[in-house]
Image 1 (tube, helix red, strand yellow):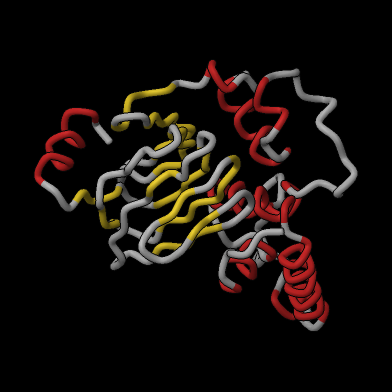
Image 2: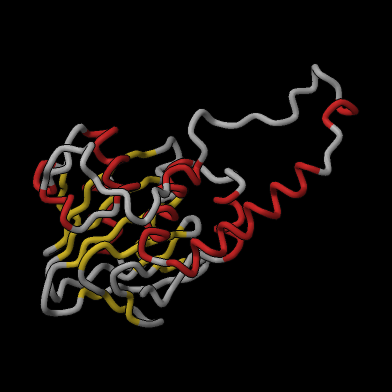
Amino acid sequence: MARYHPTDDWLANYANDAIDRQTAVLVATHLTYCPQCRKTVRYFEEIGGALLDEIDIDAIGASADPFEFEATAANDLTPPADEGQSDLPNGSMNEFVPRPLLRYVFDRLGTTDLEALPWKFYGPGIRRAVLFENADGGAIRILRAQPGAVFPHHGHGSEELTVVLKGAYRDETDRFDVGDVQCVPEAVKHQPIIENGEECIALVVSEKPTIPTGLVARLFQRIAGA
């Protein structure tokens, strides 16, 4: 069971469809590992439903259109615990990637094969595949790092959320294993190090790019467009 979770604010926003789809995919991925957070999301959904029941829609006026929902609600990304992945093509990611992320990857890239993702060099023993990137350089991406790989020491232009899909890593704060979510505030700097034993694969979401703290890392980021 996961030891680290999204904050209650993230879970509440997820339950109320108040976060972007990329972050919703990350939260939904964690929920497949974590019955505790699924329970918390249901609690927030019940609160939201009770508040809606108390609103007098007629008093607002027919033309106000106070509630605008996306065609697919964020919390619909989380399937029942016993739902399989039979409607998705077989690929190497099916073995370890939860359904919400697997569906997102297939919808965007048309594959569930790990080797077919658009991998780019991100440092010695590290590659990344960008699934979506916004105009500010924020992105949802999958990082794949070999045992013992060391990420450059870096800060963040915004809060960064990471969920571990395979393997484990450590930084200055603790160890993060499969299903764990690390929420790194904008002001925090850190340096993840992959544990020995097996490769580490993680999903990372942020609104803005990371900020390398070293000169070499900053030069590399410019060259690699990271």
